[in-house]
Length: 286
Length: 293
Image 1 (cartoon, rainbow over the protein chains, first blue to last red):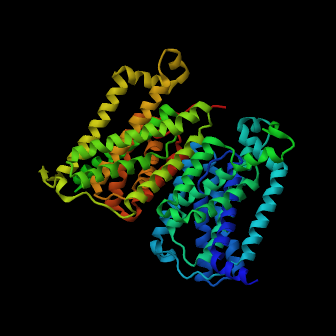
Image 2: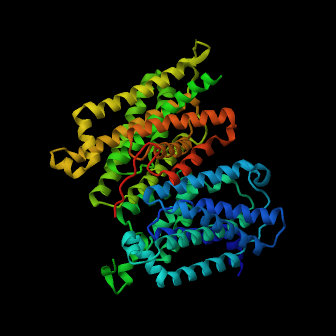
């Protein structure tokens, strides 16, 4: 088991990042699968990270409690802003969530007394191990797969295809949208809380526009056909830059190229490319 | 003091309006939220800066080079991204996500080539004279920035209103199908729109770079967010709205810095944007769009 130890010593942060990024990809899968383009996930992640980080650093709360608050607070904020925001559609929703994300980042930046401002929050105890991350990913995936097979999952697909028709079927579209938005907020917050406890240090700019785009890239790359798509997207977007380390400054370029190529050549994501090989139902499913 | 703030607000607002015009033009005519507009803005600033640094070119020449480069970027953007997605009739969120990819690619290429650090224009090339008029102080540079911004906006408005191509363009914005039936070359006009919009964005980049004398790879990102705020304030796709929204944001920022403090300056734009979206998504000056099922 010696190789395992040395592997863990070198790559533990990367492995844990894969886990939290899969959680983030799952969080944006929820809204994307409803046809909603929201880019507030980075902000929810930041709220979760700061909530949990402040609780363990300053209040010395137990880790589990910090994780719980780190996902409940973003979820309640999602509930609060979700009601008015989700009335917007299409690009307006995307821009409202973008603005929300910027406001959150600037507020964290300016609340220097509690958050440390631009200097960030330092000395967060390293409490996240592989077990917590694996458990969180497993639970999230289990719940989302069950959701996708259930009545809720079918309704989400229906909303994605035609919102007005779904509403005319007597389904409460608004409630479903709010549900996926809040659940996505909780997942992103949990990912942030876990992430903060193995990176030692967090700063407001980690949760800005670039992170939002990265999360979106994971969701779009994987595709919204199934939660498994989000898993693939999360893993690939985390590992690709590591594999292409030699690119130096050009590393973020990969996220961009991936986004363009996927939109141009396979708008339903990688999951859909793998699909015909496995599925017995074939293309009729679309 | 108050009058001086007015002057600052007008020059800042003019550049915001110029940037937002390109953004709103692409939305109105191509129906695309072009999130690469901020990166084209950065590209314009770098093109002018490099021309000034390496060829010791005078300012007008540098601005011209920036205009040509950003117009070229607009051409490529349409050719490689917008046109294929148009041909496929992709849903409107697809081009938005693709332009996000373009923005990342452009920004990291700029960063890879020129480094992440903050660059400045060489000291000799910027006019430093100041002008005092009725107790107000202008620098020549500010005056030139404002007049170029206003000139470009006037040319664009005149072109849209009076020329044949401008009328055709407005026709395409109204209904591409009807315009095509009337013999308008829709594809060519859409490409020209992308080129003009990027040109405006690139020139706005040079003007902001001159105004703040700071050029860095991520300068386009806050600008893009401000552009979005302006266009939402004015109503998406609304040309006059973009102008009014630009000045509105210029005034809001300058006066919030003067009377609230500079730390909250950026929060003002996004706070405004968020509130306007929730209360009046059709923009401050627009009419409600019809709901399409």
